[in-house]
Structures are given as C-alpha cells and as structure tokens.
Image (cartoon, rainbow, N blue to C red; front, side):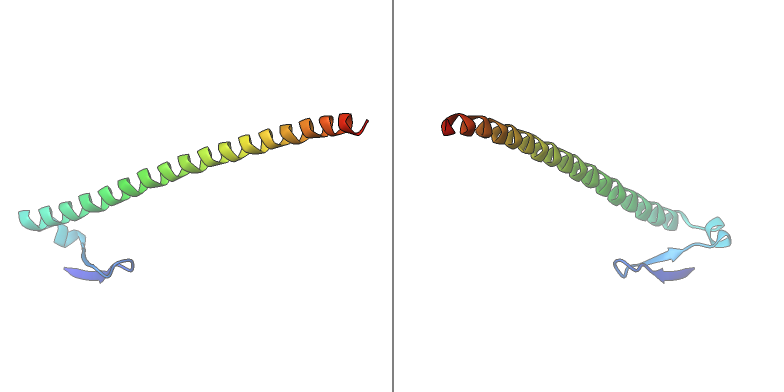
Length: 87
C-alpha cells in the first residue's frame, strides 16, 4: 500500500490501488471506513457552520438595512421640523 501526506494536517493516509482494495482484510476495511466517516463528519460539521454564518450575515445585513432606513426617516423628519423652527 502506498502512503501520501495530506497537505492540511500532515497525517498519512493510505492511497488505495484497485488491486490492493480487492484484497483488504476486514480490519483494514474498517480502518478506511472509519477514516471516511470521520472526514464526512468533519465536512458535514463545516457545512453546518458555514450555513450558520451565512444566516448570521443575512440577519446582520437586515439589521443594518433597517437601521439605515430608520436613520433616513429620522433625517427627513428633522428637516421638516428645522424648516418650521426657522420661521
């Protein structure tokens, strides 16, 4: 079996060839299946975090947009009263 280094964390994982995969023992198969499940769990968790962050950004955008709309309304209202006070 050939091993290669993963760039992100330096772990060594087996790089399977088709011939070798056809002759895996049960324990080797379980080890590879376990590694795959851990990687899928990590990807799934990252996906949840990314979606949560996107939701938070959307909420923040809505909050800022609402504050800008409210501030614009307050400015227009102030201008109306300032005209009245000058007279």
